[in-house]
Image (tube, rainbow, N blue to C red):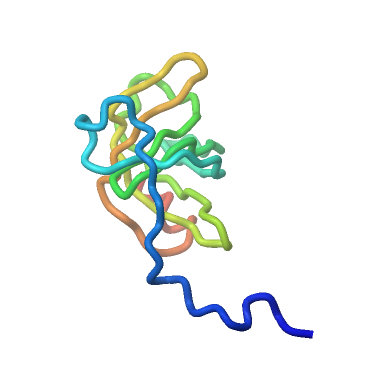
Length: 120
């Protein structure tokens, strides 16, 4: 019996279709992609679970309810295949219903959650 992927080459160099979901594409530097990814957010002393509903190389929309005074946070967005994207992000805008925030990635972080979340 032959494996299905036996004759396929590595796909890391394949072009990925990235449709523009933004009704105002000139407002953002990068195109956002619709997703449903679990995220962990640390804002001050609060440690919350969120859902990333869209993402780009420059930011994301996180469905989470944070206090209005929160301006920045540390988050881990759980990507497919067990990878985690660790970021320090600034809140750029808010949505009240359902609650959520648009964030701009300020920096990408490395290390385990316990170390990363202390910098929030």
